[in-house]
Length: 203
Image (cartoon, rainbow, N blue to C red; front, side, top):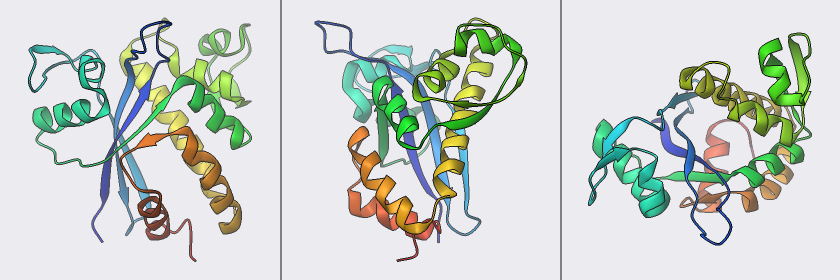
């Protein structure tokens, strides 16, 4: 079975009165049913790209101009890919997803801790709530965008590990709770099929 690739988009919440939001995180996720592995590659949001129908601009501007569909087209156009599907989640929904899962365990450095918790703590693995997880993956002042995107990948990996540890029935129950929190051009039935292929659901 071939790997399944899709665009993962994290957006900020719309500015009051505008209805416009921006893509704060852009990743390409690859699901390999054979090895049961998920691979994540981040696209730096400030890299310049040719946006179809528009001028060259920062790649995250594609979302502002045409939503996830134009961002998907832009990523395909600039990186020679043929992605057909996307999953989009905004800040509020992201925090809700983490809370639905009961929180996630994340290694936090001392430098990161003040941004996550609002106070300085020793480095260690902490069980983060949804709002803490959101703060963690939005940290941008202590290093650079490479560090920031690594935190985002760390967070998604932890979410996946938390989700996949549950039994089949619990996973199915969580799945239907999580679906309303995301926007995607994947049908729910297709998502269930993907989970089955990836071992998460056997029936």
